[in-house]
Image (cartoon, rainbow, N blue to C red):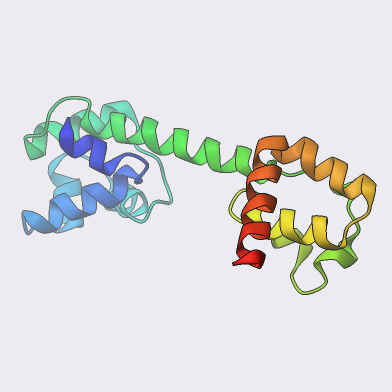
Length: 157
C-alpha cells in the first residue's frame, strides 16, 4: 500500500505505462495478450481514457500485481480531479470586487487559494470598504489579521 500512497492522484494509465516499460513490454503486444484492443491500452496510458474494473483485473493478473491496484489508483485520480473542479469554484463574490484592483494580472486567472497574500494585501491597500468586507468574509478574520500584522512588522523592521 506504500506504493499506492506515493501514486495517489496519478492517472492509472501513466502508472501502467511505467510498469510496461519496466518489464520491457510493448503496449500493443501486451494489449493483445490480455484480449484487449491496442488502441484502448494506448488511450489509457495517455490518460485519455479511464481504467475499468474488468480491464484492471486482467492487467493486474497479467503483471502479477495486487488485485484492486489499478482501480484504487483510478478512484484516487477521480477524487483529485473532483477536488480540482471544486477549486475552480473557490473564489470570493467577484461581483463585489473591482477588476481595476488587479490591473496587472488577468482577473480570471487569479488562483484565490495560492495568491491569498497578494489578494489580501492588494485589497487592503487599494480596495474600498465593500471589497475589504468581501475579502474578510472569504478568507476569514484570522487570515486577514495574520497577513496584515506580518506586513506591519516587516515595514517597521
